[in-house]
Amino acid sequence: MELVHIRNRWNDVLDTLESHNRIAWIAYFDARLISFSDGVLTLDFSDSRKFATAHEYSETRPNLKAALVASIQEVLGLTVEIKEQ
Image: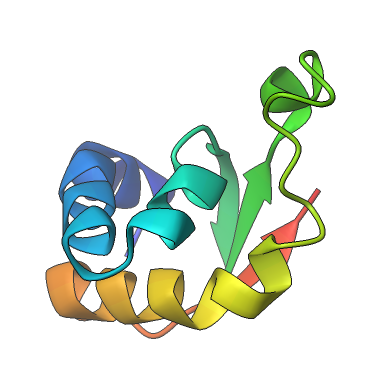
């Protein structure tokens, strides 16, 4: 699968994530999809870091990563590893 296909369905992934785990959705909703290669989806949160305290979930995201991976699997049928940039 190409990154463009993941981007095209990203809102569906986020909607599914929100329906299963709203806290995970809050932690990941502002991610930018940077690349997808060899099963690794790279996300960037530099835009959310502009607001440092209001949107900084970097310490929380590792605990919520499984929920995002499960939502990607559910919507796209794709097993991925998440990497943050």
